[in-house]
Amino acid sequence: MIRASQLTVRYGKHTILDAIDLEIATGERIAVLGANGAGKTTLLKCMLGLVDFEGRLAIDGLDVRSSGRAVRQRLAYVPQMPPIFDLSLGAFLDLFGAIRAIEPASVTSRLSDLGLALDVYGEKPMRQLSGGMLQKGYLALALAADAPLLLLDEPTAGLDPGSRREFIEHLQDVNGDRGMVLATHRLEEAESIANRLIILHQGGIVFDGPLGESNGTDARDGTRGLALDQVVKRFLTIADQPRADQ
Amino acid sequence: MIRPLVHREIRDAVHRYWFVVNAAVFASAGLLLMLFGQSDAMVLGYRGFARSMAGLMHLALVFVPLMAIIPAVVAISGERETGTLDYILAQPVTASQVFASKWLGVTVAVLVSVLIGLGITGVVALLRGVPGMLIFGLMVLTLLLAAAFVSIGLLVSSFTASRTRATSIGLTVWLILLGLGTLGIMSSFVQWGLQPLLLQAWAVVNPIEAYRLAGVTILDPGATSLGAVGQALIGRFGQTGVVALAATSMISWCVGGLALGKKLFSARAS
Image (cartoon, rainbow over all chains, first blue to last red; front, side, top):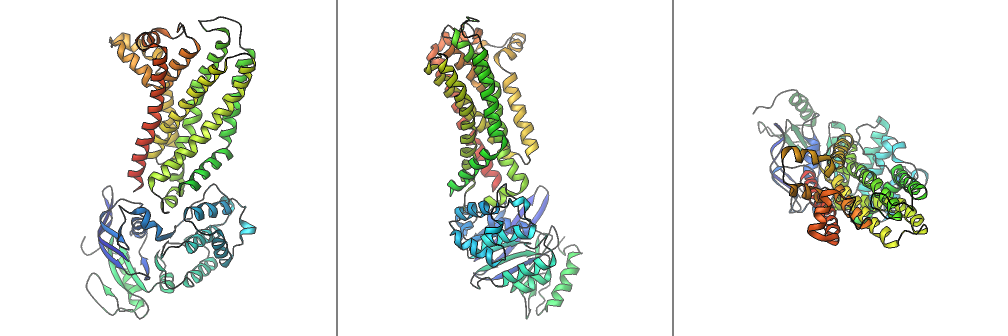
């Protein structure tokens, strides 16, 4: 369970997240949509304790500020652009597997499921791997980790359409008990993976509701019963307009 | 949790060129001093064998801080620049653990590099009749100097966002501490009429000067080559006291840099 109350992040004079209130139940699959700079990555980084914020944020009842390590034990993270360590793929997986106390066989098996054989690519330096291969390495680690919640920050950014489709299929196959927060600006990805949609715009939540048979509520005017196509329209409109309260 | 990170730091350092290059350059220069130095001469108060060691010490006081500070300043800033630091901090580790692993890893790698360079020279010096205690004393002081500069480097790295900026600041700190030795600032003291006590304090506070002070005191018990400031300190604290003061200064830089760096890093990481 994630509970955010009046969550605010400021970088200098810029307010990135503006007094957000949010509750995410255990096992829920959330897609956080928004244009570039809407605050998606910042929201995930708040959950990981990587940015300073005002307000309260707790995961499974643990305060992110004071119990950061215990909180991160419950989270597995796939970053937007996979950072390249000065390591081989095998050494990278060994290092973070050891930090998270993951059985090496579990990572190898996940990687193999993702179509990347460790005995072929394990010795290759990370800088020689494609973006898709790197992203699979990060995803394999996240999936093998004993963490009930996956945080995925635009994990398909930089992938070609084929790899993107493959990546999404793997995410769809993830055990249903595991929760997910997927930051993306691709509506089709949100639709494929999530059962609830949050739209961020200029630091605030402008839409929060279920996907599929959507009957979400527009946070601005309280409208209910929006279908996905209406959400899309509204999102695209919202993305180009200043917020009503600004 | 911290062990894999420390292993990674050491493995990374050993695989990087600076580790081998530093050890090789330091050993080569030291060997040249040992093999071609005038071991039987009595110059500037040093006993014969001590003269070559004094040469080695002066080489170390320029070179060792540099070989310690450069890998240290890029240790965190480099990872911040490439984005790998965020991923490490997204794991179930604390910022303090990450900083401690950086410090341990870089310190071990730098100390091993210095030990290899100095050790090879030390063996040759031993074979040429230099007393083992003298070599051991200089080795301990040199390791303290290296550890102090690793901490200073990591302190700089804890708040800098890029490798280039961190390296610039690190080199500036090194140049200031090297350039502002007691001889370097003595004229300023004379010109401004500052208290000699301040000059003596600076000789102890500046880790490079503290190293020189302790090294010369060990090598030249007569302290004739120490200059007025060093002699005044020996007159006040005695030889053992001066060596202890200098060692305390370097240890303080080491511990202080580590503590402050950890604090800044933890504050910035959250």
